[in-house]
Length: 213
Image (cartoon, rainbow, N blue to C red):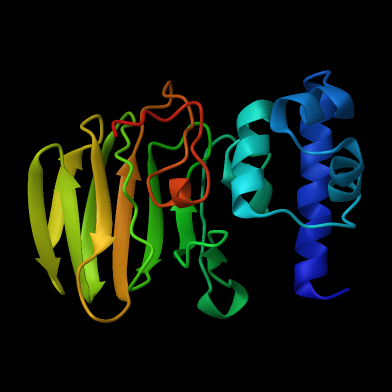
């Protein structure tokens, strides 16, 4: 079984385990997600794959984070040691948007920090503002980014960084003529609810995220 098939099967097992633990039936999940019971059954058995948009929706319903599905040590409450190997991890692509991201570490229930490597396409700008608990820092590795916080706009080039209180409405978009690469660190209090971040919302608007448009 290749890496994609193995990961698809593992995601299915974790979705089923979370559903059983919460006492929900396939019919319950289908009703809340607008996905068919047949598709959900195949997904749990590793016979079908889901888009990032669908996974965001399902993890929200089941009280999980995306990284509970992708992390090989999903049962742990706090990260002890985590090593990211570039050759072992393909970037997650957000369905239809062109945005791609690597999860580099953090994100467990008792972690207070999470780190991402984001790749911005030249098109498909995100227009919705989002807000969530915590703080975040974006460091531009290459390219140009327009980072909007409330009514302020900040043009960032390679080597520039921005640090914000994430409770402010914010969004970001590519401002150059090539892909932009960004290293992002996000902090959240252990008590804060999990919510998809602004780049993930390119594919789906989560009920837990605030839309300020």
